[in-house]
Image (cartoon, rainbow, N blue to C red; front, top):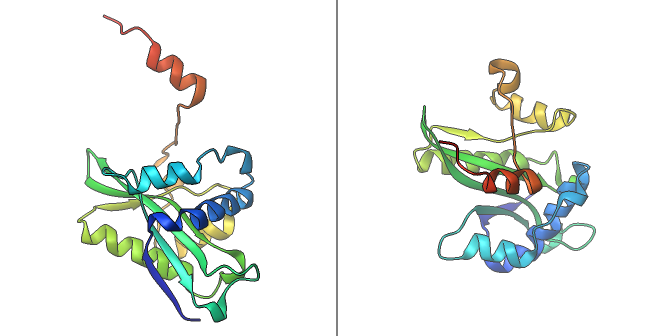
Length: 173
């Protein structure tokens, strides 16, 4: 199957929003999607974008059952490791289910890795839910290292009220 991988443009945010929701449904987290198409446009295509995104696009002849030609995406941003230096964090890599197993995901992951190397990043990082064995196996098969098992890292998060409480806490002397 022929496809192209290209950088996302602001006009693609409608399809990115659609695929974010599809991914959230797959991950059993649809209620957690709060970002709007407008926020994606602002956050990704302003003077100081918070993220970058790649699109996987197929021809009209190969479009999805629902008529979509944008069938996958990878959303990423840069971070920094005080121990290693520059890093690329991949928030999402998604291929619509009917297009999986055709090499699109591998090509998209490879392109993200190439960008990481072009930017002289020392690592490419991402998370996979523990129950999502097919995705975990996909990444491990391509050489990823499971840091939970190998190094015992825990992923932690502040959000909502906990983040508000922390931000409002008086500094201790």
